[in-house]
Length: 359
Image 1 (cartoon, one colour):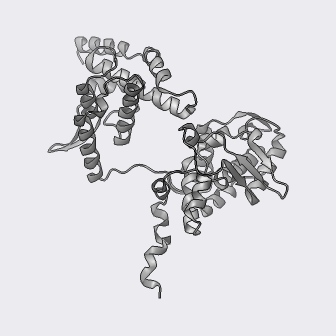
Image 2 (cartoon, helix red, strand yellow):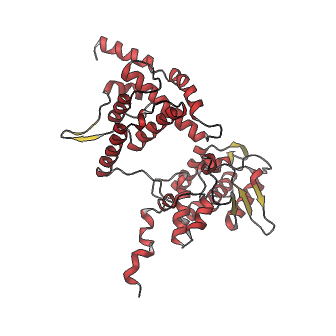
Image 3 (tube, rainbow, N blue to C red):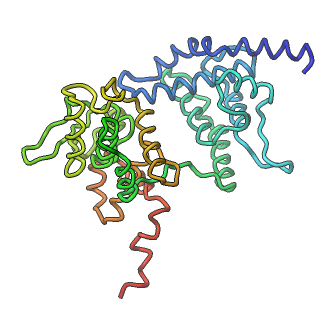
């Protein structure tokens, strides 16, 4: 790299200072996010807007403003979506800008983005225009057509959404056996059982679980009132009740954890420092508990917090639980969404695969 090129790169790097971009995007984040939006949504939208600001600054040498030109949205798509050519896969993001985005930690690694990431970032920009009641470039026919064709091309290349490996009953039992009677072991056992048995709770819902919403039943067990779900944040009234039962082994594990931790109020699942408890676990920490226990149990797969949700639905299907009963626990509103959780690992258990064996 010669001196002039280096100077240009350093000047561009100065324009891409993360703290400046974060401040510039703050007002847009406040306008986009509703008061009840989850912390995960806030981070996700802020990250997307920050990326738009950095890319636009680097691509056009000026700060992003709305409405964004339709041509800029098209350029964003072709810059980040890989396409097949005679020379192999290619995309249009200039290498120098790509490197700067990585150096400033606005982008994780060089190269094209996952198609799902591009879709999300275009959707966030679209939401910004909608809330400001401005002409929306993301809804223009040329943009929608380009995204549709890019999706088809990605599918033809074999790209599929990455799903976490389902934790069904057998995997859960293997993970539970790794939990000893230490304070951490009691917490992890209670967390795994609670997240699974109460309907495959999302990691954010587990992190938000509060003792105020947990009620003991006279006959044993608990009812947990789910006050912080994705469905409720979307402003949609679910057809199910927010009361989720926690019974049997799951209730016993929860009782043991509450007794050992001596918790009386606040977050149910907390950080553990040897023999004392700390503040509430974050959603990321909940996912880390799942990953760590799966690793200790020697399970193979791509595990995370969502594995318990996927596994709950998958296990329910294996055991022939009626779909409405499963949806009442998970709070899914769409049958298609629930069916999407039945993963390839349970394909051989589908009774429809044995029609020729039935007489």
